[in-house]
Image (tube, rainbow, N blue to C red):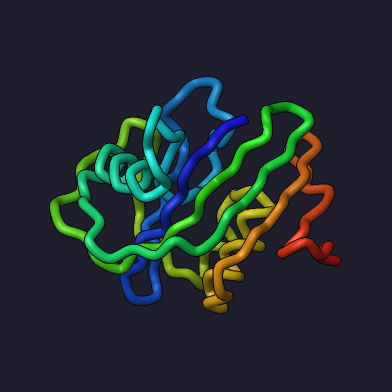
Length: 155
């Protein structure tokens, strides 16, 4: 079982996105995702997202919001609990990321980028400002086979 965080830094109608192109054997290779990563021993979700955002971007979050819990179930990886955040305030200057290329992308253009199918579901929930949610995503390989929002199957 893995605990991780993911954050979408929001600037007007754009999100800061990470195009995962730099690491070999990256489960997210060539996909566009937010910033974040795995918990270290003793970290809370907030500790982890603050550390991971700084490591990947050079930015220190000052205004952020815990938005939901996404449970990933896969036939190819251990179950992962991803704690999802958005941020609207930060300090510092961005630096290059060793995991991929950072870019500000208009929210309206996100769905045209290569990304996991389940990410489109939670990006829509964020866009609609849905209150704190639990989303369970089942994958077989790269294919999303089931999505369950707050205990109810999505069609």
